[in-house]
Each structure stands twice: as C-alpha cells, then as structure tokens.
Image 1 (cartoon, one colour):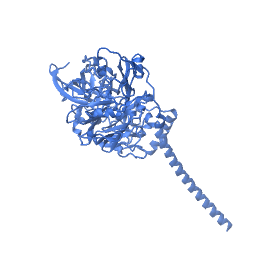
Image 2 (cartoon, helix red, strand yellow; image 1 turned 90 degrees about the vertical axis):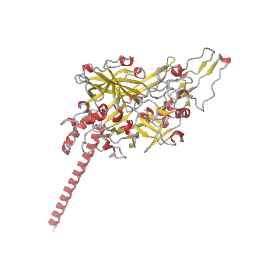
Image 3 (spheres, helix red, strand yellow; image 1 turned 60 degrees about the horizontal axis):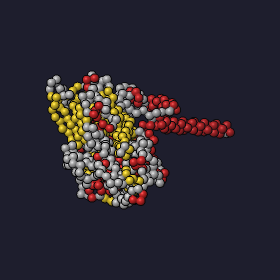
Image 4 (tube, one colour; image 1 turned 135 degrees about the horizontal axis):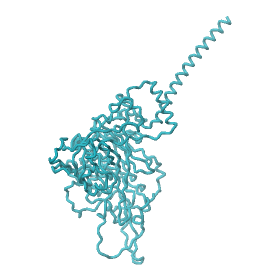
Length: 593
C-alpha cells in the first residue's frame, strides 16, 4: 500500500512539474514577444508613423500607435527635414522683425541638379528659376539648366513637344505676395532622401535581434509597389528617394519680393489637382501614380526652431510622434477650386463672437506657404485692435498674456494663443513692418493712401500718447507694442470676400495632415518642445531679445523737434509677411527664351 501511494504521488508531482514547465515556457514566449515589440519600437521610432490615409482611421485613440494597412504592413512615410529660414527686417538700420519660410531639398534632371523649395499647400505647381532668367531674384539663386539634363524636354502646357522655331507657351502666376513667369518643361523630379533617425549602438543590436524574430514570425507581406524585392528591409539611408517624370515650370521672370530676400530657390505646390496647370504638373498624384508614394496623403510639422528643433513634412502618411491628440478631420470645401479650403463656422476673440461670420460664407485656405494669419478686410482692423498689447517690460511677445483666438471649423475649434500668433519682437510706435495692401489680385489698384497696415493699430487699452517735456530737453517716453502676425486679405468671389488664410500661426499650434484622396484636412495639437513646457514655467517671464536686436526696440526715450514732414515708415523697406497662396494664372504665347 505504501509503495502504491508513493508511486501515485511521484507521478502526480511529475505531471504537475511538466505542466508547470510548459506554463512557464508559454510565459517566457509571451514575455519575449512583448520585449521584442518594445525593443523594436525603441529601435524604430517611426513605429508611430501612419502609413496611409486608410491607416489614419485605424489609430487607437488612447495610444496613437500605428495600425498598418494589410496591403503593405512595412510601408512608411517618406519624411523630409525642413529648414526654417528667418530673414531679418530692418528699420532705421536695426532689426525690427523677421519673415520666415520652411524649405526642403529636391533634385531635377539627370545628372541631378539640387534645389531648395518651399512645400506650399496654397499653390499647385513646381516652380524653379531657369538659367534663362535674368531677374535679380533669379541671379541670387540656383538656376535650373534644362540643356544640362539628359531627361529634360521643352513642352507646352498640354505636354506636346515644342518644335524649333515655334512659339511656346508661358504662364504667369500671381501669388499673395509676388509673381512668377515660367515656361514648361518635362523632367525627372526626386524628393530629398528620407530622414534616418540616429540610433545608439544598443538600439542597433536590439534591431538585429528583432530581425531574427521577424523572420521566425514569417511576416512576408511587406513589399510595396514602389520597392524591389528585399529593398523593404534596407535602412532609410539606402532606400531610393521617390522620383518621377513630371511637368514643371522653369521661371524666366521672378518678382523681387519676396523671392530676392530668401535663400530657397523655388516653390513645390501641394494644392489639389485642379490648382495645377493640369494633373501632370501636380506632384503628389504624379508620385503616387508612379508607385513612388503609398498614398496621396502628407503631414506637416512646423516649429519655430527653438533649441534647434527641426520641422518636417511626411509624404505618404503622418508622423504621429508630432501630435498630442487624435487628428480631427474636416472636409475640403469646393475641392474643384484646388485649394485646401475649409468652412469657418465662427471666429471668436476672448470668447466674443465676431460679426463677420455670423451670416455664413466664411472660408479658410490652409496654407503652409503663408507666414501670417490672413484676415478678410475690414475685419482685420478689429482683429488687430483686439490683439495688440502694450509691450511693457516684455522683450518676447510670445510670452505676453493676450486674448485667445478661436476659429471654429466643422469638427474642431482651432485655438490660437500669443505663443503662435504674436510677432516675437515688440514694435515701437510708428514703426511698421506689415503691408497696407495685404493679399490682393495682381491687377488690383496699387493706391497706397488707404488704411494703415494692421501693425499700425493702437489698442484701446494703450496709455495716452506721451507729451514732450520741455524741461527735459524735449525727451518723452516711447510706447512699444506687441503686435500679432496678421495680414489683410481682399479677394473677390469665388475665393473671397470672407477668406481667411490659415498660415504659420495655425501650424505652429497644430500638426496638419492633408488627405488628397478623401478631400479632407486633419488637425491635432502639436507636440514640440515649447508645447511640452509647463505653462507655469513661462509665467512672469519677459523673454530676451535675439542677438543683433538693438536700441530701436528697447530705447526708453526719444526727442521731438520741428522739422520737415517725415516719410511714412509703412513702406520703409521689405515687409515681414509672405503669402505664396496662388491667386491668378495667365497663359500666353511668346518666343521661347
């Protein structure tokens, strides 16, 4: 009996031990898989990339982790770094403000000619200065030489080849600021190579370990239509950049402003198909049809570059690492016009609803190429009066307490604060860097006797204008103001008259995604270094002036004396507003240059 019980106990313990070993094996396998996923996420930061427009809708809102479309699990957006260019605007020999642009690299032709372009959602064509252009703006930039490219061909707007001796077509495109006249060319266009995240040696080792586990899992459905066999496993720096043969505009004339003062060479339009001369001039559809992008979808991350933080544009997806919330989508209004145009339901300043949109009809163009917030006249004056603040001791106007601006669109309230809508530098009274004309059609009247620019408005809460004190050598106190980045918009129907331009002030607050296939725009609060700061840490801070900004802005007194009337400073030199929103297109026949 004793022996029988002992054997029974032995077998019972043996089976329990085997079950325990099997159970622990399962736990070990699960733990290994979890560790593999975590390691892979750390080795591949772009696991937070949304691959296509379809994958946007499958995002887990609690984590914003990517769920890849089944047709191409390994496809990733093509991310290009954007360089922020900040050009100083001078008044009386001193820096009074800055105008800004964001640009990235592309190449044209074979052998490749490299150019720096603004990726502009407010226009529809790729424009590059040509060697034939003798305008001052062209001579200061790299110029495209069609004759040096073996893949280039002179064409008309419909793509037909030009026979020697025939007249060729030229197109003149007017922007919110500036104008370009171009001829038509077909050539190969390549986007800059994709950004490759810097990895530590430990991360590289983890990546190698995970490659073995990926092979064990037999995930073989990862080759996109734009990749050759095996290329999907190559690191980003070895992948071929997207290239396609497409129609471009070679500029033979460029206006002095704003092109002369910037370092970028040209403009790559990212508007909808109908904003281009025709679909063969539209970059995103051309790259998609050529199998070089995984979807007609791109996302834009613009930051002011504090602490050397870089901006970027992601083609074929959205970089959800740059967003602090799920994207909110709004449909494009009148897509046949070609603009990323959205309905504006209401506009509020400090909770007060403005009259301009109460009876409907307000629209907004989402434009990466516009540096300011465009406001339709005459509401621009009301905006300025409500937002301008006496600077007091503030040297960085982005830190000053000021009213919130709310722009309500279907599905989202876009909320702007002084952090993004204020000019950085305070302006002394009487010094203006804005345009009195704003955004108008090229043939609009150039009469400059109209209202002063919005940055000449004095707020209601400003202290009375100082009176010279004869007892102190006619010295008086200087008034300084923090002024918003606003520009007046005066465009007729069908785009106007109640047209806002949602430029950098909006995109510095919101990551913006553009879905060409579904004709919609997505907004999500931006995740940059400034937004991650504790708001309490910015309280009671007055900021500091950048290097090179001297006494024009900070002087405390000035002298008043009788003299001949002074020239208005409203037209004293370049302006700080830039709008590359396309407002006119005119095609003519001329001898080719």
